[in-house]
Image 1 (spheres, rainbow, N blue to C red):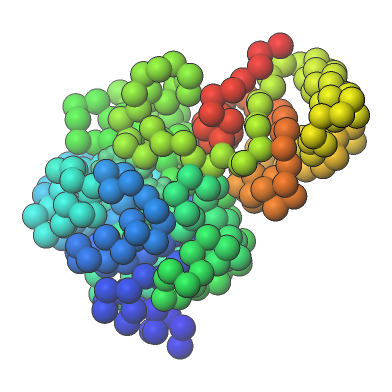
Image 2 (cartoon, rainbow, N blue to C red):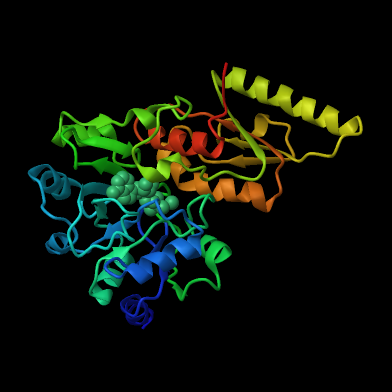
Length: 340
Ligand code: AMP
Ligand code: MG
């Protein structure tokens, strides 16, 4: 069986890409420093960017953290298994290689049957960042893992398309005020139902604010397509007009003897037919932000597959899961936002 084989690989210090409900993870034994080093090497990831440790049962958390505060237990009861990662004080057994040198550790119980079975088969917590090459969009299909990591890892478990499509919400419980370090499917208001004092890290509220984010990974360029991506915010009509005017300028430039540039728009079901670009991709309906979230990373990858040079994306409301969508989209655009 593939799962038994995958568990053996992890126990013996190898790497396995596997599906979770958020994105595909690149897993290794969280307690083995050599496994964590291999994860960094396979991804080309800076070694100060810590990994998330995955468990399959709450009883396993005592091996990973020094102590479990009441706040963590309450969040775990409400949101685990599920797309929520908690930052807690590191347990002694967890090597610094896994935590990027930090005395805190990120821990999560994924809500995906294959992920849970893999952790059980491995008989160890699994350290797993997203299974992409560092800087690329996170993988939402097994094929994306193969594109980035084939030949560098021992195995890929194919569980089909993931359900959520954006990485987990990260909440820091190692400080006095519970603080969201990365927005995700579990929103601030959902966390505030359990911990009313919870806040959002100032470094991620605005991608262009210049305040350094507290999660080490959030400071790196991420998700970025090779083409030049700009996000445009405004009323529907204003956004369509602005983007079409920009597209016309690019075409005029190409026609007047410049290098031919391939144009692309990342649009929504409501607007996709309104654009005059070489490539238009529809993320889904604005009425269904979860659909938009599910498709975002795959569409960002398509921009590279199709060799798009100049890319415009419509902005989304910052409410609910929209905060996570906009966080990833603005990172992909290097903070480039046109406000109409
Ligand atoms: P990835 O799974 O690839 O999305 O990467 C894991 C994310 O968790 C990175 O952005 C890290 O910065 C963040 N993270 C992991 N451990 C910690 C920690 N101890 N403190 C703060 N952020 C963390
Ligand atoms: Mg990642």
